[in-house]
Amino acid sequence: MICFYNFFDTTLIKDFMMKPSLLLSMVFLFLSATAQKKNKIDPMVAQLNTIKNETITFLDNRYDLDKKTALQIWDFAEVGYKETKSAALHVQHLKEAGFKVETGVADIPTAFVASYGSGSPVIGILAEFDALPGLAQTASPEKNAIAGKIAGHACGHHLFGTASVATGIVIKELIAAGKLKGTIKVYGSPAEEGGSGKVFLVRAGLLNDLDAVIHWHPDVVNAVGTSVALANKSAKFKFYGVASHASMSPDQGRSALDGVEAMNNMVNMMREHIPQETRIHYVITNGGKAPNVVPDFAEVYYYVRHPKRKEVVEIFDRVVKAAEGAALGTGTRFSYDIIGGTHDLLINKSLAEVMQANLEKVGGITYTEEEKAFAKKIQPTFNGAPVAMETVATIKPLSYEMGGGNTGSTDVGDVSYLKPTVGARVATWVPGTTAHSWQAVAAGGTEIGTKGMLVASKAMALTAIDLMSNPLLIQKAMQELRTAIGDYKYKALLGDIKPALNYRD
Image (cartoon, rainbow, N blue to C red; front, side, top):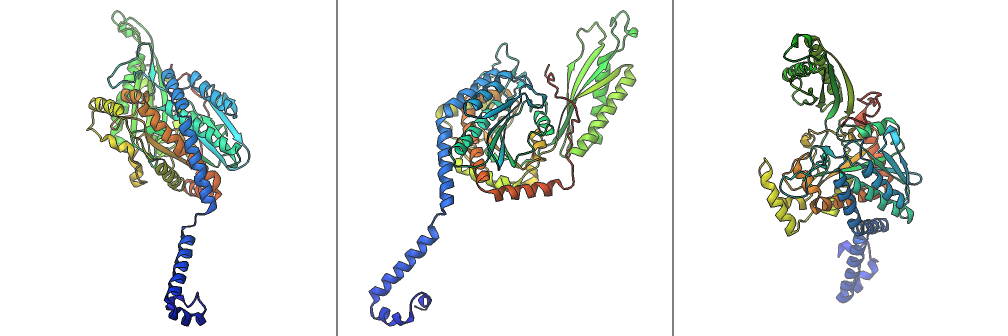
């Protein structure tokens, strides 16, 4: 009885003691009032949940349209800076939805910025749509190249761009209905695969007015991105020699291919003497035309990667020195053209927590029996051990351990140095698939891929809603970014070059 003295007039105690039923009634009323207060939902939270549920329904209702768009772009399979039809399709849908769209930005014909709304916050959504050369493949679990095609969506960017456009459109609808305030921008970002398209958008100042940036990427799991991508610098090295008859007058010739091979040998020997986290890859893009002609021109395309941007620049400079030595030793001359350069990716934990909650709300992917059969048929073509396909139904917990172990690169890295950035990875491929493979192309051309795309658009849209509804989230994320950057002044690793619009030629 003592615990009720603060709530009841002490003069009533005798009445309560004399009438137990009255006492029990008062206790019941007290406990009921306490429970109601505890379980009461904040009206703002309830409204936000309603908006999120409406958003999920909106995206479910337009799924067939988005699936059709994604598969059209999968069929276009246009390589970096050549994504004319893919970009035009996205622009068409954004204009039809009421966006103001500026095309051909940053000296890139296939880049665009679509805007809707006014004032802050200003949220950016990144959209990619370039394919990879040499990976044309049907949407089947057997390796089956498509005759006449030169490329395939082995990194799922047909899904990437479509989900991002859908996200932008649903947020636009919420702004138009007065349920959100601010501005939404969708960035058509060409040539992520080696062309560093977003770096030119950043360099042109097109993202300067943003408060936060959201993106995603196809994968074999559902997780918020917490992997620190590698910084990257790439170039094409061109060697020039003297042509001659390879048998009758080889002494009169100077082989440009010798220059390329000498450079490759020196770089390969250099691998022992560089930090072990480094990745260097190359491909000879032109090695001559006929064995009996000493090549007077040859070209090799190099990537240099490292977790730290400073190390990438220093190692790349050593690769250039190897090219100089190769030219000197083979009696040729050389030049090089920078193709791309990207920063490492900064992870914003404040935004990651927001996106994690939304990805968990959306949930993973469930395969149909037909899709399970596809997965079972394609999994034996992988080199690695089989991975349980049930993993696509789960959401991985947030983990920042060892930076996630990512050894890829992305031009989103440069964006992350400018504005707080967050992204998700969503299962669009059969578990065990590696990116940049024919198996990724195959799954991406089926509903296995487009189902994941829908999850991505929902997770991005719900995250955008949170950021546009709570300025404190953006303030916290911006402070985290300032701390991460410190006194570093951003400078594009690719310098002041123009976009290499023909780098895939």
